[in-house]
Image 1 (tube, one colour):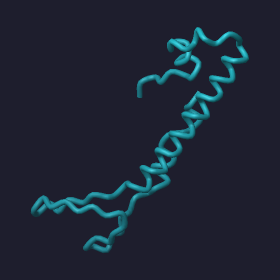
Image 2 (cartoon, rainbow, N blue to C red):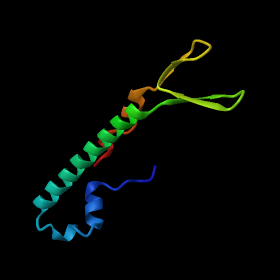
Image 3 (cartoon, one colour):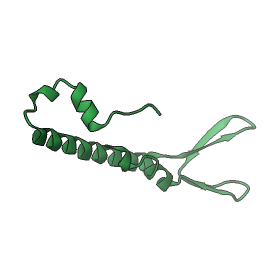
Image 4 (cartoon, helix red, strand yellow):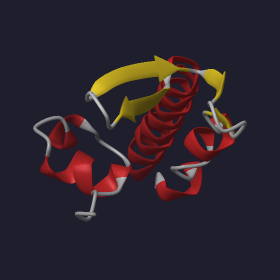
Length: 95
């Protein structure tokens, strides 16, 4: 994965950085940016986990089936592991 800039790095390269007059203002803006990003990432992962599905391909005729929870013909259950989506990106990565 490419390195994603921290909130501070992003702020420095933005045109808005020069409008901040003090370090206190800078810290407040950076903290708000981080919380905003965490909120959106959390919501995005929750939505992805709700809308994810399992896709099966019948190899005899290339027919595609999509299900969220199914039992296959050989009695093997399949479903979407929602926690694998919810935990796929740590909010600790947002700095």
